[in-house]
Image (tube, rainbow, N blue to C red; front, side, top):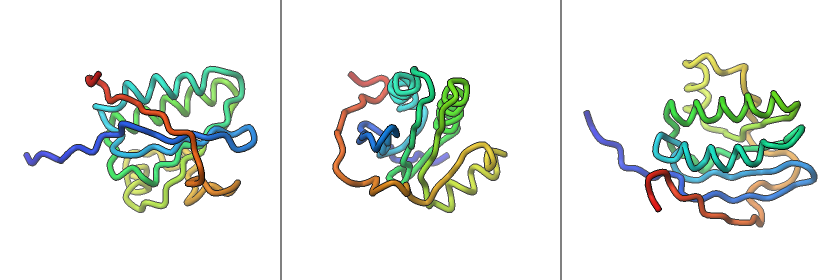
Length: 132
Protein backbone atom coordinates (compact mmCIF):
# COMPACT_ATOMS: atom_id res chain seq x y z
CA UNK A 1 0.00 0.00 0.00
CA UNK A 2 1.44 3.36 -0.95
CA UNK A 3 1.14 6.33 1.34
CA UNK A 4 -0.40 9.53 0.07
CA UNK A 5 1.36 12.75 1.08
CA UNK A 6 -0.99 14.72 3.24
CA UNK A 7 -2.11 18.23 2.39
CA UNK A 8 -4.71 18.29 5.12
CA UNK A 9 -7.04 21.24 5.34
CA UNK A 10 -5.71 23.54 8.02
CA UNK A 11 -7.41 26.75 7.01
CA UNK A 12 -10.40 28.10 5.24
CA UNK A 13 -11.66 31.43 4.03
CA UNK A 14 -15.11 32.54 5.02
CA UNK A 15 -17.34 35.41 4.04
CA UNK A 16 -20.97 36.41 3.88
CA UNK A 17 -22.76 37.24 0.63
CA UNK A 18 -26.20 38.57 1.55
CA UNK A 19 -27.58 35.92 3.90
CA UNK A 20 -25.31 33.19 2.53
CA UNK A 21 -22.18 32.03 4.33
CA UNK A 22 -19.49 30.99 1.85
CA UNK A 23 -16.71 28.76 3.19
CA UNK A 24 -13.75 28.06 0.92
CA UNK A 25 -12.04 24.89 2.12
CA UNK A 26 -8.41 24.35 1.20
CA UNK A 27 -6.30 21.23 1.45
CA UNK A 28 -7.51 17.68 1.95
CA UNK A 29 -10.84 16.96 3.61
CA UNK A 30 -10.15 13.67 5.31
CA UNK A 31 -10.02 11.73 8.55
CA UNK A 32 -7.33 14.07 9.91
CA UNK A 33 -9.36 17.26 9.34
CA UNK A 34 -12.89 15.95 9.87
CA UNK A 35 -13.19 16.77 13.57
CA UNK A 36 -11.96 20.34 13.42
CA UNK A 37 -14.00 21.10 10.31
CA UNK A 38 -17.08 19.45 11.82
CA UNK A 39 -16.89 21.66 14.90
CA UNK A 40 -16.77 24.82 12.80
CA UNK A 41 -19.44 23.70 10.34
CA UNK A 42 -21.69 22.70 13.25
CA UNK A 43 -21.43 26.26 14.54
CA UNK A 44 -22.36 27.63 11.12
CA UNK A 45 -25.40 25.34 10.90
CA UNK A 46 -26.72 25.84 14.44
CA UNK A 47 -29.32 28.49 13.68
CA UNK A 48 -32.60 28.31 11.80
CA UNK A 49 -32.51 28.17 7.98
CA UNK A 50 -28.74 28.23 7.44
CA UNK A 51 -27.71 29.14 3.90
CA UNK A 52 -24.28 27.63 3.34
CA UNK A 53 -21.99 27.31 0.33
CA UNK A 54 -18.93 25.08 0.65
CA UNK A 55 -16.39 25.84 -2.08
CA UNK A 56 -14.44 22.63 -2.63
CA UNK A 57 -12.45 23.80 -5.67
CA UNK A 58 -9.18 24.15 -3.68
CA UNK A 59 -9.66 20.63 -2.20
CA UNK A 60 -7.37 18.16 -4.00
CA UNK A 61 -8.52 15.09 -2.02
CA UNK A 62 -11.58 13.97 -0.10
CA UNK A 63 -11.94 10.57 1.56
CA UNK A 64 -14.90 8.71 3.05
CA UNK A 65 -14.58 10.68 6.30
CA UNK A 66 -14.79 13.89 4.28
CA UNK A 67 -17.87 12.61 2.44
CA UNK A 68 -19.38 11.68 5.79
CA UNK A 69 -18.76 15.24 6.98
CA UNK A 70 -20.52 16.65 3.91
CA UNK A 71 -23.48 14.34 4.59
CA UNK A 72 -23.56 15.46 8.22
CA UNK A 73 -23.61 19.13 7.18
CA UNK A 74 -26.33 18.42 4.62
CA UNK A 75 -28.49 16.65 7.23
CA UNK A 76 -28.05 19.46 9.77
CA UNK A 77 -28.95 22.11 7.17
CA UNK A 78 -31.99 20.13 5.96
CA UNK A 79 -33.22 19.57 9.53
CA UNK A 80 -33.15 23.33 10.11
CA UNK A 81 -34.93 24.20 6.84
CA UNK A 82 -31.78 25.62 5.26
CA UNK A 83 -29.88 25.31 2.02
CA UNK A 84 -26.48 23.79 1.23
CA UNK A 85 -24.61 24.13 -2.03
CA UNK A 86 -21.25 22.66 -2.94
CA UNK A 87 -18.97 24.33 -5.48
CA UNK A 88 -16.78 21.97 -7.47
CA UNK A 89 -15.96 21.61 -11.13
CA UNK A 90 -13.90 18.49 -10.48
CA UNK A 91 -14.87 15.47 -12.61
CA UNK A 92 -13.28 13.21 -10.00
CA UNK A 93 -15.47 14.67 -7.23
CA UNK A 94 -18.59 14.12 -9.34
CA UNK A 95 -17.39 10.57 -10.05
CA UNK A 96 -16.97 9.94 -6.30
CA UNK A 97 -20.52 11.18 -5.71
CA UNK A 98 -21.81 8.94 -8.49
CA UNK A 99 -19.98 5.84 -7.22
CA UNK A 100 -21.19 6.39 -3.66
CA UNK A 101 -24.81 7.02 -4.69
CA UNK A 102 -24.69 10.65 -3.52
CA UNK A 103 -25.17 12.35 -6.90
CA UNK A 104 -28.73 13.51 -6.23
CA UNK A 105 -28.12 14.28 -2.57
CA UNK A 106 -26.08 17.46 -3.04
CA UNK A 107 -26.57 20.52 -5.20
CA UNK A 108 -23.16 20.84 -6.89
CA UNK A 109 -22.35 24.01 -8.81
CA UNK A 110 -19.28 24.65 -10.99
CA UNK A 111 -19.08 28.15 -9.44
CA UNK A 112 -21.04 30.30 -7.02
CA UNK A 113 -23.29 32.59 -9.06
CA UNK A 114 -23.88 35.37 -6.53
CA UNK A 115 -20.51 37.07 -6.93
CA UNK A 116 -16.95 35.83 -6.99
CA UNK A 117 -16.33 33.19 -4.35
CA UNK A 118 -12.58 33.75 -4.41
CA UNK A 119 -12.86 37.47 -3.63
CA UNK A 120 -11.79 39.10 -0.37
CA UNK A 121 -12.54 36.87 2.56
CA UNK A 122 -12.00 36.70 6.26
CA UNK A 123 -9.37 34.03 6.94
CA UNK A 124 -9.48 31.80 9.97
CA UNK A 125 -7.14 28.99 10.88
CA UNK A 126 -8.68 25.62 11.59
CA UNK A 127 -6.23 23.39 13.39
CA UNK A 128 -6.14 19.85 12.07
CA UNK A 129 -7.39 17.21 14.48
CA UNK A 130 -4.58 15.90 16.61
CA UNK A 131 -2.51 19.05 16.22
CA UNK A 132 -2.49 21.80 18.75
